[in-house]
Image (cartoon, rainbow, N blue to C red; front, side):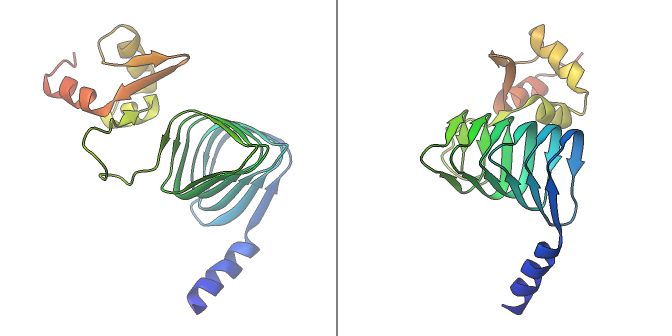
Length: 179
């Protein structure tokens, strides 16, 4: 119990409150309480608690531990512990988390995956993003986009986003279609 209290005290000391417009990649290796109340565009990777304020507008893919959203987020969100959407949150993107809370007045447009890695029925389809496919194939995003748009790589375009089924990518790899 003392260890948990000490960690909570350390997190209280590491609070970063952002009220400005920012662009780029923001990554934290140590736990911090990050609150975004302004605009952010790019990529966001946090440890600790991330809070997106009611008036915040975030256009980014987000990875974190605990994420609380009251503002607007356009992008995919992955949380190791939990995601909480509180009114008037508006999220457009896919969510992956073991625990999701959506309060009345909050909106979510996208897919939600709450199953732990490797759990659940075998018929659950594992969908990958362009970034995940690029990392998996060890090529650049531009190469993945080119292969997907020319039909060399199995993919489906939904609106402006490309979606890749992991099993189809693995089948494609095993059939040695990389040229």
